[in-house]
Image (cartoon, rainbow, N blue to C red; front, side, top):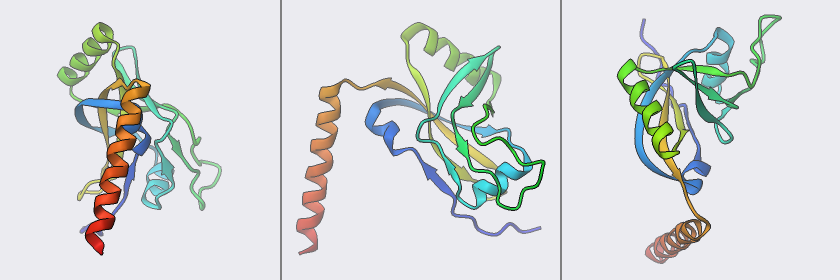
Amino acid sequence: MAHKSTNINIRNKKAFFEYEILERFVAGIQLVGTEIKSIRNGKASIVDAYCRFVQNELYVVNMNISEYDFGNINNHEARRDRKLLLQKKELQKLEKKIKESGLAIIPLKMFITDKGFCKVEIGLGKGKRSYDKRESLKQKDAKRDIDRAMKF
């Protein structure tokens, strides 16, 4: 069965402003049937989401996947914790880095692969200070001004 080309690409722009991303990983995510249907309709948000370890397993918390419009009594809960699927070595590496240096794991983007699987790109991030955020805004404004000047 050929999968139709899906352009689902849900981004967390706030994460790049709030955190300096040091390392990235791509993880699978454990979903129920109505959740994947809602994601394919583009009805998901990872803006307020973060990841945490529970008994050596990584969960994404506060991710909002809206209820499926045509779901019945078996519809999913919008903000439940969802398990991320990574290899054991990657999980151990992430857990070690979080404990030793106080970094955070943040979902950066959610996408659907060619095979139809939902994946989440997570980043190991260090929180930015307020002056770093101001610097990011200056760079963004400068880039916008350059792009504007190039059009004319």
